[in-house]
Length: 138
Image (cartoon, rainbow, N blue to C red; front, side, top):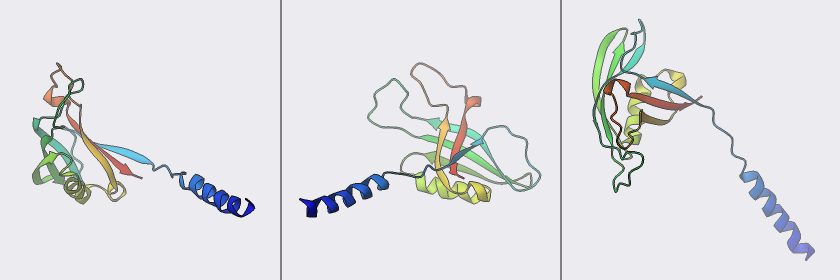
């Protein structure tokens, strides 16, 4: 009995300490439709939402859907590129890489991003209310 208690205690302690997960400090950046352009560096602007086929809250769907948007990139107040992007599970890594090219160094560790507001059943979203929310690890 004594011989089996020590390995069990050791295994129990390892499992308990393995459960302590460090909380990541996540900050958020917004990519809005209308912003004052900075004079230096990159700035992202949501030019338009082309389509939003996400499953609205309150509805049961077979397919989660996706959102297609155009994002404009400005550097030193000059247009660099207009990029059409599709936000879906399939394109997540590709979108993270694209955003990290144009975000400041402290925001390059992207954890999540989403197009907001999320659709609700029976509620029409004003196109001017859309924005992209990017979560990054500080």
